[in-house]
Image (cartoon, rainbow, N blue to C red):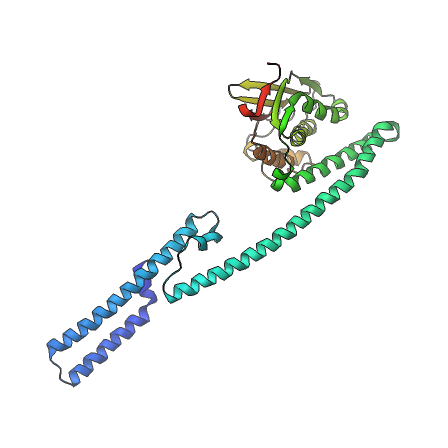
Length: 339
């Protein structure tokens, strides 16, 4: 709060004061008051006016400066009321009460919206669980009666299954902590389970699998880890190159206090300009224009889940050469079961 701006706002008070001084001067002259007394009276009135202006300015300055500073420095500006002392001047009390009422109204609206969102999420989760039953039946029928299903039908069933699973995890990601069950999980078992799930697509696309010894247990949630690995494997299959030696290689590298699970392929790769954006929500990039089926949600959800699990994830790639997805477990998240 600047004094010059404060004075500009009080300009009519200043003008009125000057007019009043002129009127008093005329009155004193009319009564033939001595010049010394006239000057003294005008000086006292002026001092009282300036003093009252300064007192009012500094009293308001502290409150408004604190208000503006709190708004600038707070991550959540709507909590500004919690940082303010109740002002001792009338205008400030009105503003403080207005902020209180606005804050109260906002909290009520946020609470109602949260209830609506929670209800919607609950309904979506319930719907997904219900729709997974006929999908599971279709998958089972397809496995037991492959001769009655065309390759395109099998592919479409798998796509539906993957998309339903993806939307379930997307809905849950904000409250994923409630669905956590952190245990010692065998990397070997989880990777093999995902590969078994995708074996038909891997065989159909003539992709060579290279799986090194994964003799480590990691502290994580088995269900979330399977989803993460499955999304990465699906991307490797989806973005394969039409070459004879297509491969997906899965291996681990132990380095000091961390363990890297690496899923590498020699697919179409990712443009260098797209790499910083691959974990952004709905980002499809250059490859998304090549593959119209891309939603840009898979890696976004994967990154969110890794963050919540305390694992790091990174992507290295060179266009038309390779892509590496690296999931990093810190030392307290894994141990070598061989030792």
